[in-house]
Image 1: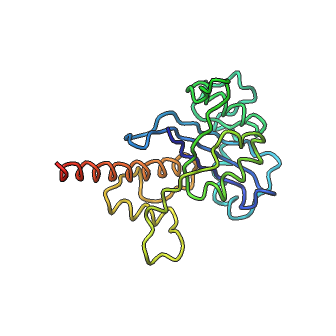
Image 2 (image 1 turned 135 degrees about the vertical axis):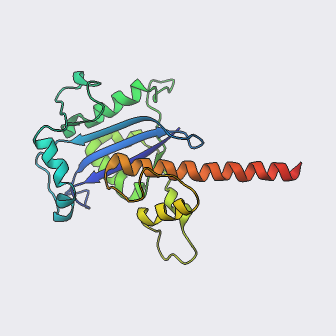
Image 3 (image 1 turned 180 degrees about the horizontal axis):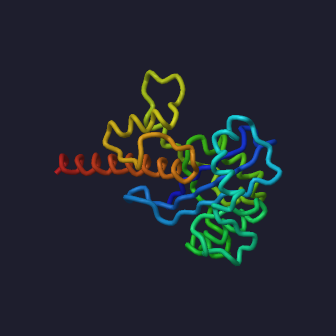
Length: 216
């Protein structure tokens, strides 16, 4: 089981800025779609925003403020809505509840399995914010993570391509996405990462099957 993780933040500095939206999708690399999806917004209280991120997420902020996106203040309401906004202090408990519900915690000592996170720049960016917001939440992820965009680098690339370019290259190979553009929302971007990984693993499985046929 792998976990595609994406966050949207109020800026780029984890010392000053905050997670505003977070999504985790459980899936199998050799599968054809997602398993369970955890998607939450954080109620924007006392957050420091930079101008770019504020403009990008302004419509969503308005929806939360106007209660167009359901919000909860007690986890006893968990399950009433598939996606909702909650205070940042409840995010870790909510995430653990989701893990328990889906049995992602079956170590013999009762502790949680550490998740293998998948995402673009997860270790260098997302994980730095997650550690600060979730406190001991850094115990929930393995230090090794998977960035599928590196599989789509070309010899002429000086740096790894952005997600938009990666999607373009993957579509040329037959990978299917819900839409070609990058939406910059947590659940959609996490879905893109999942599709990239499943696409590469399917290609690998086909190549291995072809090699077996040749050997025979």
